[in-house]
Amino acid sequence: MILRHIRYLLAVVEHGNFTRAAESLYVSQPTLSQQIKQLEEQLGVQLLDRSGRLVRATDAGEAYLNFARKALRELDAGQRAIHDVGDLTRGTLRLAMTPTLTSYLVGPLIAEFTTRHPGIRLHINEMPLDTIETALLDDQVDLGIAFSQVRSPEIDCRILFDEKLSVVVGKQHPFAQRSAPITANELEQELLALLTPNFATRNYVDAYFQQQGISPNIVIEANTINAIVEIVRRGNIATILPDALTRENELLRNINLTPALPHRTVALLRRKDAYQSSAALAFTQLLDEMIDSALFDE
Image (cartoon, rainbow, N blue to C red; front, top):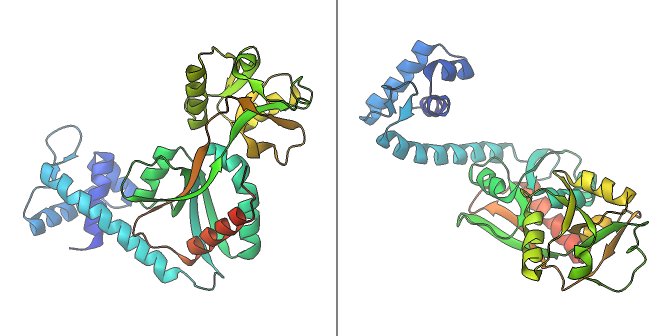
């Protein structure tokens, strides 16, 4: 048995069709079929059900694929380890962050990291927490920065800092010069621009509204943080976002809310027992240094 057999099997299951799998692998369909048949003969079981319109894994095939995928992930990690350079003159780091965190973490973190290690190639992906978990388990990313409510026991969750949410307004908004907190009832009277419900931040905000028994006047929903920021900084509409977003934007103001919105815990995520490259270790060290310097403290 060779790795090619396993990769061929995965391709057929993924595409559900020998023809499309062969095209994706740049091999002929007869060659692909022959290789799968050889693998089945070596294992002594039928791995694929070819009787329907879609080719599917048999029960034995599913059981085998669970281990095959894990083995391929480890082999890919081993290949990266071979190419990893301890002096950080070259290498690759694959990062994933949730959308609200990219809005204020990417700038300072990546600027400092690329200054220290210009030879490291970075791949940054913005995705929700559940997608980050899947990507870590599938070895598609090396590290994730997200909130700490991970579900998989295979993910190591290392607490970084607390993120504070507050009301955010533009400098021309009537609340902009206010020093005292606003109440939930006052917020209920304001025009609001909020992220769409598929954002974790929106879920926190909606839970707060429900807890306080208020019906917010949401006039705008947007699926990008940049859109919300632009709308708020140019008008008399308020929003609810992380405090850290306003630090380098002189056109925005944070307004405390009473009762306060709950804090969220930000964590560094990685797959347990996964290989950690020199680049990943260097990034983790930098993150610790920036947290110690109070860059992300509220």
